Structure formats: structure tokens, C-alpha cells
Length: 360
Ligand SMILES: *Cc1c(COP(=O)(O)O)cnc(C)c1O
Image (tube, rainbow, N blue to C red; front, side, top):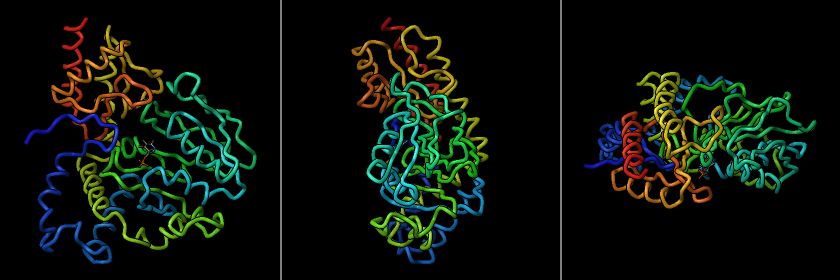
């Protein structure tokens, strides 16, 4: 077996302990004589899995009782439509545009109502988080929407916006469970799981109970009503059973290393190694304003496109894969999610030092 250091932005690295456990249970899940992939979602076996998965997530994130945890399909992208369909009562929402995912959500919402861009960092290629302390929040806004960690550009809110009393909705796809958060600060906090939690194909949405109603836009498909999923315990239709099972294992793994505070410490230590190197390198530099740097996605450049390409190619040959920056921005990006071990970041920095030495 030969594993690489995988810096993919998503689907992304998973903890090896989790993969090994899944391998062990593949043919015969705990004496049931079948894989979790083969089980009825209506079986007691699977019911135990989904209940325990939800309980562990509630425990990890300290989710208050008045929030529902929904396991749904369609990824984060389907939420871009579900959120306005379910939440727009006045037909108005305010969006902060900090990158492509926020922009996509904003564009989608425009189909259903008046979606205002109340701030943006497009002027500087999304390299910073705009000041959100005094936004021109619409009087009748149903919610304020942010993308909390910008996967492509590598920025992260260090402080939530002042929504002036309006509901906050946040896409945390690429920083999910990377640090403790206060769920009560949000109306909805949601994310696709393939960045930091599990296999692709599912979104976990944590929704305040009073937002789950039949009062949705009249054309809303049954499958796109939060209430449909909440009433059915995320099993209105066949859920992504295997993904739920894998997420559950990752939750247990995070608990085993000490929960979200320990995760945050680990993530800070890892990111510091890379950022410290970038800050003193003559060849490589980070592309993001220091105060707004993400702990999860670290974009960097050499300033020379050919050298970038050479670096990506040689890194790959050395076992550091998926370092090419997003197709829209170029350069490099190292995604160092929860499951990336500190050794992976140390080894990458060592490789970067050697590359710099040879190519200067
Ligand atoms: C990856 C990503 C998405 C899209 O997720 P899908 O599950 O592919 O729809 C949305 N938002 C953010 C912040 C992401 O990183």
C-alpha cells in the first residue's frame, strides 16, 4: 500500500483510521453479514447508525435542542436554491460576496427573489473578507448569507457579520468541524461533507426549528422543503446511507482526538507551519490578506506561471498531489483539512524549501 499526501480541495483526504475501519467492516458489518452499502435504510441496523451519527455531531458541535440536523443530498449547491425557497417570506435576502461559492448562491437566489449583494471583495480578486460590522442590511431582509471559508481563495471570516438582528445563513462546507462554533449564532449553518467530513454526495444542514415550516414558495419541490426532511428524520427517501456511516466514523475520530477545540489547535499548528514558510520565502508567497487567512485552504504562487507548473509537476512526482490552484485562479493551493496529518504539511514545506533552493 502506498498513500500520497493528498492536498485536494474536495473530495479530500480522510483519516486513515476511518478508512481502515470501513475496510474492516466492508464484508460483514458487526456480524450482520453484509456491508452498510447493502442495508435497508429502514432496518434497525441503519437506524442505529444514523441516530448515533446525529448524536455524535450534536455532541461535537454542542447543537442546541431547537436545531434540527438534516442529512440531505444535492450537495451544498442544492442549498443555494433550497435556502431562498424555504426562507424568503418577504422575497428579500442580503448576500456577502467573498468568492465563487457565495456568488453562485447569490445568483441562484436571484431566481426566487430580490438578492442584494451588500458587500464584496471582488475588487481584489477575493483576497480578503470585507468589513461586515456595518453592512447596508435591507430592512425587510429574510436573512443574511455568507460563505464562511472560501475554498478557492483561501479566506475565512474571523468574526461573523453584524446582521443587525437578521437571520444569518452560513455555508461552512470547507471549514465544517475545523473549530468550535456557536450554533446559536446562525439560523442555518450547512456544508457539503466532502471537504472536511466524508465522501461526496451529501450536505449536512443544521436548521433552527422555527425556520422549518410549510410556509415555503408554492412551487417548492417536496424534496426541497426542509420540513419534508425534518419530519422524516432525513429518511423521506433513501438517504446517502454509506456517506452517513462514514461521516459518523469521522465524528468519532474527531471525538477521539479531543473534539473541536483540539481540532482547532491542530489546524492552527499545521497552518502556521505553511504560512510561516510562505512569509519568509523569496520564491513562494501567499495570496491572501494575513488577518483573513483560512486554516483549511492555503493558496500560494511563485509569481511565475511556468515555475508554478514545474512545482506542481515535481510535487506530484514526489507524492504531494492535487496542489494545482483552482482553474479560475491558477497558482497553487494546499488544502489542509482536519484529516491532513501535520507530517504531511511538514513534508510539503521541506519539499518547497528544496524546490526553492534548486530553482532560485
Ligand atoms: C465545494 C463547495 C461547495 C459546493 O459543494 P457541492 O457539494 O459540490 O455542491 C459549496 N460551497 C463551498 C464553500 C464549497 O467549498
